[in-house]
Length: 187
View 1 (cartoon, rainbow, N blue to C red):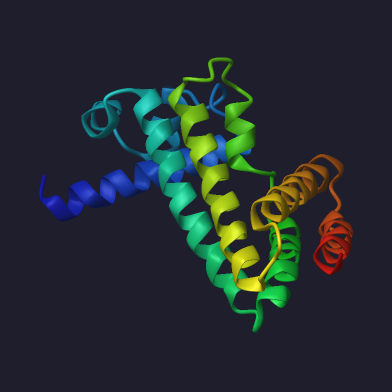
View 2 (cartoon, one colour):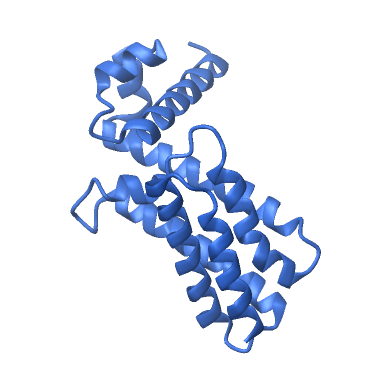
């Protein structure tokens, strides 16, 4: 197998596993389903990832990278730091209204593990730390008196909006969170 086809198989596995895990969860994404859905032999899965846990970790790391790149790019389109702080929620609302929105993949998968040292929980924690760091960057650009505190408060609003929109099926929770963010920014 040449490196191009090896890379294509790996990407197909990651794409398929990400879709299945996001839609149905880790536990419901068995190897038989992954083989059937991806069209890739079970042996190839183990060749590329070793274990299902390794595959899940790779899926989440790739999703983290892609989601954060997308989110940063969209939020940074706003012209000023204040507008970017509010755009956090405008961008989330767009995501909430998209086909297939099922909440935060990291919260969903972390909820399937009880061990705080589990690699899935580690990746989820790292994702939230990156998100917090990005929000903090904008708070610093904005010139907030207490950028760490404001970033943490905005992260709570972000997480609350994601979970409420997912569980209650209503994208407008992003609007409510944005109104609360506006009040925090102006105080």
